[in-house]
Length: 77
Image (cartoon, rainbow, N blue to C red):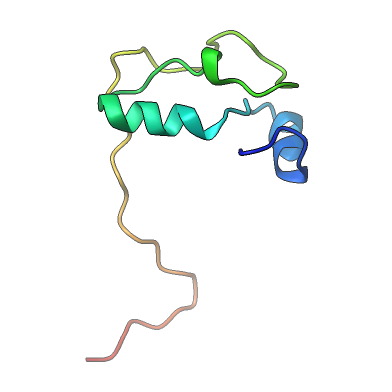
């Protein structure tokens, strides 16, 4: 999240999520590895520990292919 006090951030916290700033994404991309999110937590996050995180040396999650919406017809060629 760019801002800690948004409805989206609040929903994430209520569902047990951790709210981090965009700097975490940029640093993970720059270093080509997943970093711990603790230093990037936004004010008001419910957790400051690394519970539920993958190890620091874990590779970034692979990009999934685009998802097709249910009921959507395949493109006609």
